[in-house]
Length: 472
Ligand SMILES: Nc1ncnc2c1ncn2[C@@H]1O[C@H](COP(=O)(O)OP(=O)(O)OP(=O)(O)O)[C@@H](O)[C@H]1O
Ligand SMILES: [Mg+2]
Image (cartoon, rainbow, N blue to C red; front, side, top):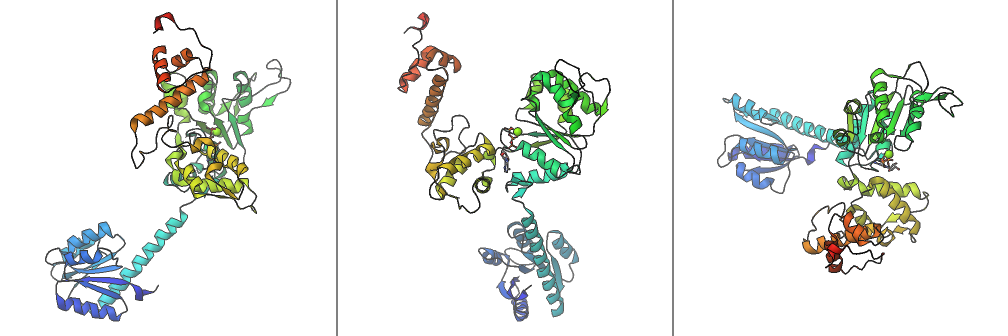
């Protein structure tokens, strides 16, 4: 550590004391500045930073304690040593409580000062070092999960902690936020990582096959069951089973899963024996399970069993700082390493501005798609798909605006654009049939006609018969 470069501010209303300390510390090789009282010290602090402040307590205008309070709040890295009179030890103790590093009582010896100053500066260096280490630990990825934002740091921490247990985990988040990736990361960091990780999408298997898929069946248990079959729970034994889209689980299977979670046993279709299973269950959903429970579509007792530890993944638009990092990651994934492919600044700006309803999966697709169109080793703005190129003020119909544009906006024009877009989409959906489009948007036919005329939209669908009561 090079002490010689350390800067020290000496604050004392007594000129002789300022001079004494200044000469001594200067001789020690420190860079020394002096101030006559707290108020002048504040002026010095404005725009300058010091490693250490040595300040008297009793001073006119702004005293040492007031200065200490300011320093703790505004320059937390600066160390502070208070000078007190010998008679006032309580004052010294008080100063330490308020965040001073140490104190010296008058009169003092040179050696004492030297030592205290040296210790204070060493302590400061140590603190900085540990801060830097902490910063270095801030990860930009974890088990293939990319992201450096605060939300992702929190997630990494949670994954690490959950992985160390065998607790049941519910992963929630919008589509494409990485729920399956997180489930895999939990497994990969667990003590069971060498046992199987088995995933199944509850929404993708026909209801009548799901039970046999999960629990297996005995030979002859139903028509077509020509062989006995091992279910996924058994296959995952000792490891992790990931039930994706748990919100889609049919009512009958909800009861059966509840029983497995309570008893830690399964029974095959057509079987008579209970088979013990030791698996960690991770479930995922992009539905609001609480709402499903309230609506009677998901059993409350099962909900409590699966919702033991909850990891809620943030949508991509809530962690835009990660977009450049993710884009770079997907580019590297797509193009061979020898091909240099970059993103133009404007293209990156578009990526950051977009609201990403399909989250990371959509970003991955966009990068992949754009990389096909690119010519000169750079993905340009115009290589991006059209949904990203729509101006921010007319693209926000569904996702809403992220922020009010700095220059403000024309509210009527903005709403008009959204309205027009919705009308066109409704007409598109109904093949131009205005009556159906009106129903879709829950407005009257008359209102629909008025709005279409207002925006000059002329649908080319079948001209439906005008109901007589609506004839104008
Ligand atoms: N943080 C991330 N870093 C890198 N890749 C990611 C990240 N999150 C998601 N992905 C990638 O995005 C895609 C979608 O992720 P995943 O399938 O885990 O999402 P999901 O939440 O399960 O979506 P869905 O609800 O639609 O099933 C995958 O290709 C995955 O590898
Ligand atoms: Mg998924």
